[in-house]
Length: 67
Image (cartoon, rainbow, N blue to C red; front, side, top):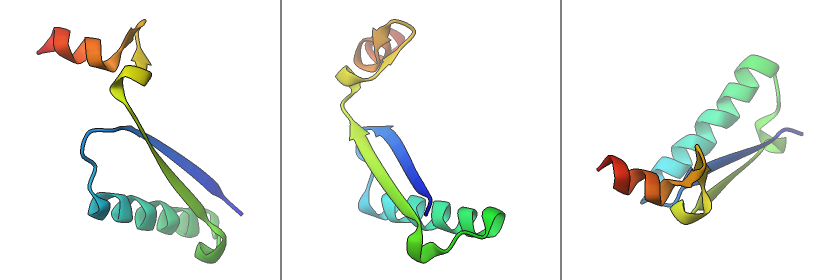
């Protein structure tokens, strides 16, 4: 029973995009590992950019600096 957790920053990922991710990951696990789609779990977590850090700073700060 595969469990896949996808974490993305909370910046407007659409329901359609999430559906594509879930379908695509499920299909990939079936194609590569032969895992049954009926028992494959895919969870998408959306994380605020203030709660995601890269290189010692939040994504919010990093993006403001790069802009």
